[in-house]
Length: 383
Image 1 (spheres, rainbow, N blue to C red):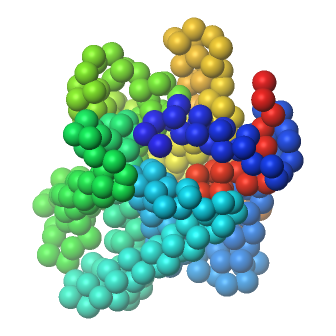
Image 2: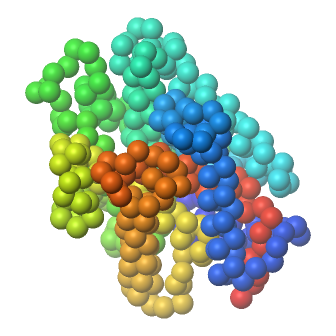
């Protein structure tokens, strides 16, 4: 699963080969995936997170920490390792086993950090869920640090050296670990550590989260719907890989200020802005996560349409559709869905919620259903 086009082709092949499931056209297939993903997500929310009617209310923590780590484990298994080992199992057993491993690791890794290392470092202490927040923020960095290696960088340089799975996957995981630790220690940890002070951090935590998620939004926009443009203009694999890795930071910085302006001047009511205060710098992440959700859904469940126009027009139309839907979904969520359906707290009357938690739940279920289960139960008709 080195890039979005290959991922979509592989999923389409797996789906067409399955004898079991509803056979649907492209539109029906996309709608059915949407219903399955949102239905399962809402069920999980009602069980573990709903602040009003949840059976077991673990929102926002520890639900958030384990949710975020589940996404990162999916990146390890599904993208870095390319489902190595699990893909040999028939469905739905392959998906069930991969999900079971994911659930085991997404609880074990944070618990080791919180209840192990947290005994030594107050930033990771379980007291008042401090460690859950610190551990969850590792995923913010790791989602890019591990994911970009398999996606935009296409496994470079290890695939060029002739490495195959699972060794190329382990090489990516090792490199991603180093990248994640370095960036986390520079950007995030000083904002949480007891020895720090506001004037000793690279940027305040809300700004760091909002800026870095803008980098993620650029990364997945270029990788999933723009066919790696503009980095595809580089002629060599090494050039494209390095341009993508560093270029996302440059374009992500520009996007951060664009999203911040859009949020302040258009999307967030004035009274809500007053309540949010300096934390507004985090909100490019709250908007960006909705855009990312639509990008993933469009590439993995909608065939990355259109594909029949010229390369330039394909990219332009995909970009307009996905970003318009992402921004629209943010508005619907903040003004209705979060408060009335998910029972999240209002910031001001008629506006509220925390998109990062709900949308990352959607992203997790989407990735598990598509990558682990190959959209089991749904078959897309040819043509």
